[in-house]
Length: 98
Image 1 (cartoon, helix red, strand yellow):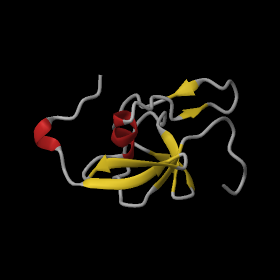
Image 2 (cartoon, rainbow, N blue to C red):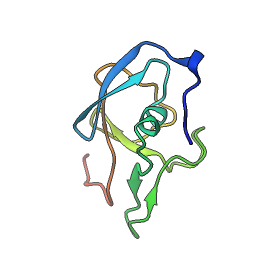
Image 3 (cartoon, rainbow, N blue to C red):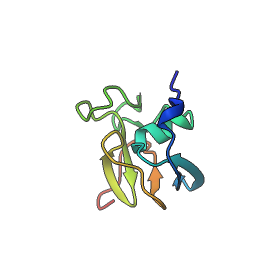
């Protein structure tokens, strides 16, 4: 289970997950912030619809892809959380130009 170490808590950072307000911690990656909200499914695959979530947490596997501030296919494990960030999980095939 994902649990933050007490000494690792930083200042709060406001952002949204699929349009819903959320609060993370400064220094977290987007993946860590989503996991803290118990979000395990970040996307589904375009062909089979298989559910995907963070696997390696170091940028190798591409299972944690989300849209961040309108930019699709960002690796949540590599992007630091910022104030006001808009994070969207992805379902199936993305539309061209998005």
